[in-house]
Length: 250
Length: 72
Image (cartoon, rainbow over all chains, first blue to last red; front, side):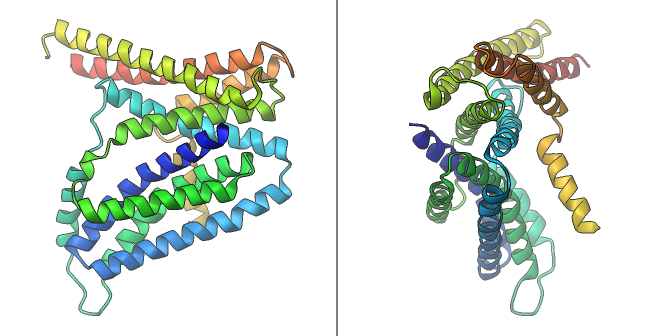
């Protein structure tokens, strides 16, 4: 069962990050040069793939599995809690939703103001697309490596991430600029919950915690964290609206 | 040196960034769970409850900040 959760976590995390990367690539392609933007994206994906292939197997070979699980679990906890915190704050109305359309417009405006080079390749479009794909993709690489290595399913995690990249690429090409329609916050919350569940489980395993339901404990953790998150959103949104209303700000 | 600095900055942003309370919280949570003793039946529950407490503290910090800002 935890395999399904792993695939879902990697797939959703990759989708969220790739939507953000796609916004940048679309902006670079629309305002500068499609060829250079696509070349930059391909170069970014190639470097990320090399990172997974280069780092993954060596970590398994040289680091004891107990230590690896503890370190990876702690990393997943920190990473997952950051995502979850952001999603809770957005759902409770304490933080503005991520607006891909606005980001796209701003990026296009900024890129159009940079003079184009006279030679064949547009270095600005290439660099912007490469940086966008690489930086957003680094988080995906970390999720793939951490979840893939602790579960001994690096290949499955990589394929899941690749499927997300292809899906977002195809959908992005079809819908073009309507990226704001993607329910990014809900996806971010789902990924955050899954990462925190895996992080708790693996850091616990690394410390010798005896989980009462073995691997199925991941699902129990997911359920407990989901309930706690829903409660937190309720309480925060109610408290925040209440305080603003009492002050006449709304 | 430039790349080393960039590498260190990446990990700083990744682990701490603008939410140092999460990093500190997790270090404290894992420390407490380790102190409870290997194989203790309380460990799994303590871990889950303390993780929930960490995210609650972090969102509450932001909540207080927002409320304070709206007062001005």
